[in-house]
Image (cartoon, rainbow, N blue to C red; front, side):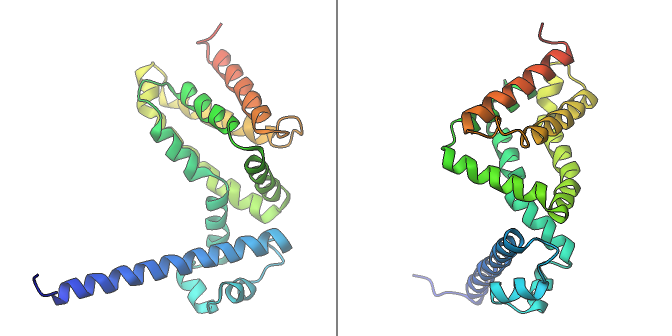
Length: 211
């Protein structure tokens, strides 16, 4: 066996530092989410987040340069944006944009109801807290642009322009957002899947590809 080199040692130490840094980052995000959901964002101080995460305020600001950035990162983690983008990437290349969105919605319909209700509670918390709602809206534009990018090749393959695709994504997002306020739509995972399918059918007809 060859002796370890200084480079190997340095790489091992770097890996340990990176894992420690990620654990610290997640501890801060988890602490912020717990306090935001318990007390509301406006009533939650940076000091209280740092104390719960067992870090100093200086360390917190090292990871999140401002209070707004911390709120935005918490929203990004809990609003399922990244998970939906990952789900889009996993769909077969033969599916068009509407088919992809429908498949993802139907997959959510297979979610256990207790898990689905956790998602509903998260969206209710976001909708009912003005600061969290503002952070969500700030993130939404960038998220939809990423969604458009991830669906662009599929849209081009069926003759849908990028402008049409962008309108589709914004319309779907807005209509789904409205559904989250409807008790019947959030009664169960299946009810949610059925409601979002109706939304997609309306958009498909409006686009003119379905009679």
